[in-house]
Amino acid sequence: MESEQAILALAALAQSTRLDVFRLLAKHEPEGLAAGDIANALTVPQNTMSSHLAILSRAGLVKARRSGRSIVYRADLQSFQSVVLFMLRDCCDGRPEICVPVVESLKPCCPPKQRRKANV
Image: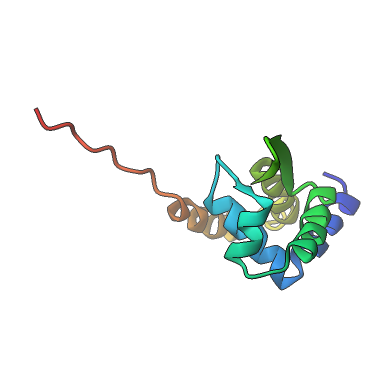
């Protein structure tokens, strides 16, 4: 990832509504949410939400697809991962003991869902 792309992504997330949008979309992966549903969930006018979504899209943090009359947005988690890795790539300067705790702290954020056993 180039510095300019990382700056664009970080700048997009440096605004509270857009950060809330990205976090909401990340929670709704992989289905995503329609633009109107995002606006309603965050109580933001739809025209304002459209601007926020456009900024996130230009920054490469969200993807959009048309579904009937709606546009469904999804968080681009691969792009976000690239931003995070860009930020952490040189953090340890050859000393992994510094970054290992940071990386390890990311693991419990998404524990696998337990499958229910079918009652027979």
